[in-house]
Length: 136
Image 1 (cartoon, helix red, strand yellow):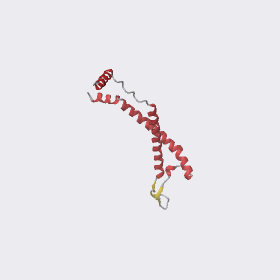
Image 2 (cartoon, rainbow, N blue to C red):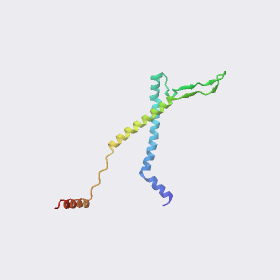
Image 3 (cartoon, helix red, strand yellow):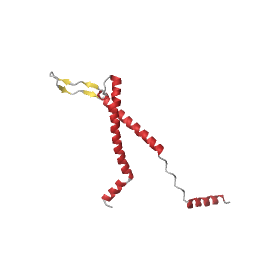
Image 4 (cartoon, rainbow, N blue to C red):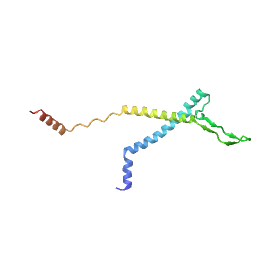
């Protein structure tokens, strides 16, 4: 079997196609959740807690920026940007929650595969076995 035919067989499997669709939908969904967090949730949290609208600007300054006499920045500010971290954590938690709820609903809807019917010859052999066990 040539490499191209093996590749076609690999791609044509349902699992690979399903995975590709899942990745594309997951990326699009991640963008939706990020837009929700950046545009709606975080401005509300920022307004309620500190009166400003951007949580991503929250930081703890370790060393402020150094300016020369003309007001030009000589050394950049050194700061821990914990607001950006909080925003990213909230993004992750919301995406994980929605995926959890989706999978929970999917598993509830999905019906388990019915057990295959036992072949008649196996049933007959079981009857013979049981009859021989009961014989004195």
